[in-house]
Length: 224
Image (cartoon, rainbow, N blue to C red; front, side, top):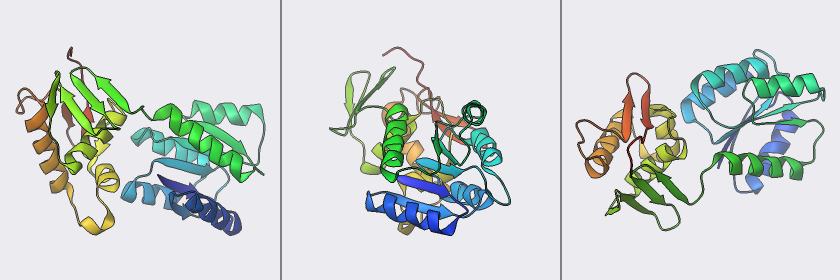
């Protein structure tokens, strides 16, 4: 899982990075809100760990900006333990709230709990679409569909948040590694390939929809 951390204290930032990497996560750690937004735009993330008190752009401002473009899970981290602060974070769209100082094992448990809430299970059924993530099998209207690994990963990503628009950059960050040298044209190519395999009429798609100027989303509204 890719985690993006914003923490202005260098010692705490390094401690978090080392601990979470030891748990098998890919971690990008930055010192302020501006850098976090830049990294998120460039690489995406599965979860953000966001300190409230930061220079240049505080955590509240970053959270508001993130929520305008993404529903990525966000855990706020702060030294303040007031009910008002927690309510503010939740109202702005935070998924959880951790107060400093905290035990690293508690943080790990909270990350896992948030991801369990937002991540779909191994079997996803949306209208005519059925994805068995354990078997890596896809059926559309009851019929099996053979997908390449990249096609499957793209469909699985879109199905993880039905209705959410994934930008080209988000898709590239999650589906292609940095060594693949992929571009927006590759995203378009795989959307085209997927549509030809799962849509009744690829020219008038009803499962994978284009949000012009933004990206793609899964919008399954048909009956199975």
